[in-house]
Length: 388
Ligand code: KIV
Ligand code: ZN
Image 1: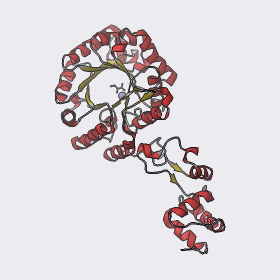
Image 2: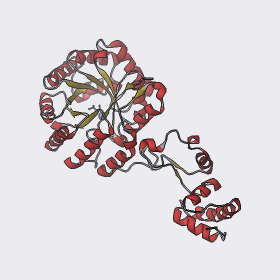
Image 3: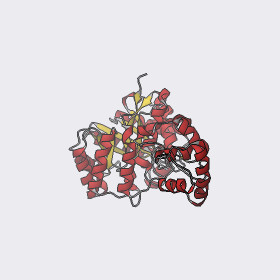
Image 4: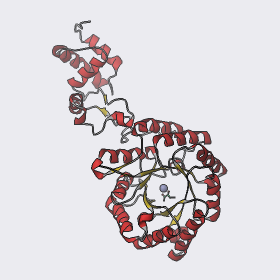
């Protein structure tokens, strides 16, 4: 079955870098941008060029070195922002300006002290102006998650007419439920004249832990771009995690959707971003966390040793992890101990294993995890005769 491609728009270097303490210098940004290009992301949001001279320079350098991906710069619906972004992107093979404005009543009243009509006009003006510099213009309706659908559809229709090629529908506050976010995409697909000329994009924040689920609901309902970050880093609770959406689509082929990502680079990319940003990845993080392919309870270990698929829904090699690990703890059974003992050179008979297991439990009750070095000691203490 031929699959529809969902574009991966990576915003690690823009939304991700907004995290306190995650600031990167230009050199680090260039290393990450090159890696994202290699990984196969379709669009790299390199920064917000008007925000600082440093960000301007980084976007410009990234635009020079990126070979395949579209390079994108963020702006507000402000002329000067758009001019500065166009200048920063001038060396990009395929530049994109990402401009927009808040469309929810909360943003219109409290952020802009304005009204819907004035915001509507500013949105159109920003897209037209960006279009005078680049062909590819993405419009974001900030806080679209809490924006009235009818007004959102009106804005979308108008900015498509003004030349927008992509419509970003951010759940800026991470408020929506998957059904709600999916329904919003469906509503726009069905109610915006000219929607087929533009790509709908998901940009979800993780305040309620729903960023990934919402993005998947978005693409199931017609969006064809997901905005995400490596390890899900980003403002507050973060953005949609790149590795999660890529693997969800790959593990569910019946959805008929896939991405251009080389998933075998996911784990290394996660390590690189974590190290450069000084942001530790939680061990239980899906796909790239240290425990994502580690099995510690006896029942699970026994299953995985017999057949990996009993407790693993993907091959660790597909995401760049060498192999699943069988951890030895007080919850491990004989199968796990025999497996690990064999790995370090002991082929134990059933009788030997019973003896070694007894000794192992004494160790395991004292230690969080029994490691290879301990196995040698345990075997020695068990007083069994090992054939050499
Ligand atoms: O979350 C958001 O709404 C954003 C926009 C600026 C695209 O990051
Ligand atoms: Zn965001």
